[in-house]
Image (cartoon, rainbow, N blue to C red; front, top):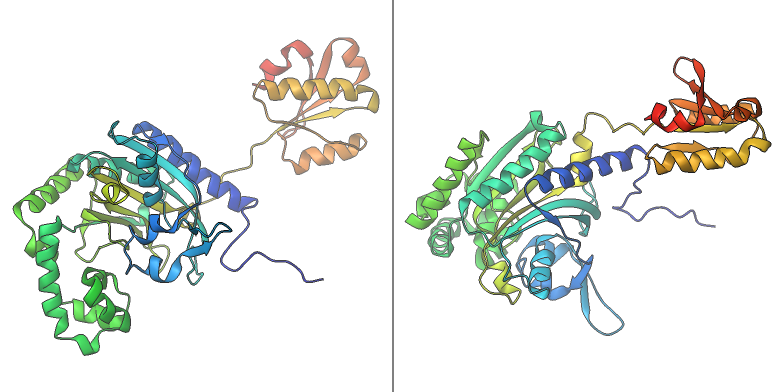
Length: 411
């Protein structure tokens, strides 16, 4: 029989990997709650139009990476490649565009067909934040600050730098687009095949090219900052001023455009030097047209997503396994009382475990494997006095404790 293995680009979350993953999610859930976020969960598949129409028909995700399929009813569905589009669809579908702003946290699996590599999988997991309904740069700064606080709570900021850029409003981007096309058209023959296509359909995406020749050509290309109108320049200056007031250091990187077409004004990335070429661990930007593209009213928004796998890799160590209390009956006669005490401790919020079978020696061995910090020994003589023996496993000390006092002693 063929030995079944995980599909290429996927992994099982077990043991230390699972603990790292859960720690990232728990930290993000706790910090985003401090910023007033409610947690939303959207389906892992949507109508293909949710992504194909709104992420940009020339984006790599739409043209190369989406897992799309036709269901039995003939509908075209797609496993979600990112979280923002689904959140905006949910906002409109649930009639929430009249109760703004909405601050949203989400987490869950995403799917992209791309070459698996360090920290990158075809089924990967994200945490994300969206602030929808706020047009002010303060919302952008708050989203960025929340991301930074999560990274700081995870203890990984030593290797991370915040990069920011502006994409301007539509008028500014149109002016910049013209200047960029004029410049790159001179070097059309030298551009990569992907960039030649983008030059016609979405030239700003060339700024995100990883091709060495493209990168060299871009060294002297015009910059977006040279084409900002007063409104866009004021927005960007306001963002930088608030970030400075919050004590957040940043580097201005005019090459950041992010991967989707829905961004405008702010674009940002937290980049780590500890992951090699795949250094972006959290990134996002402003998207003031996306909700409208979903069929809602004109609604501004700002958000980010972060790959849990990459964040988990940066943790100095995995969170420890909680140390339980081992319940050990001295014989089968004390098993009913052991079951009662097991339920009592768990009901009081104390992690406890009871080996399903075995003599005293085997049950103690099981306690050691669990790295239990204490054992509750239940014997007939002590039980007759309404007591049990509490054994501290780290030093071997033990004492008799009244059953009525056991929970308090362990707490």
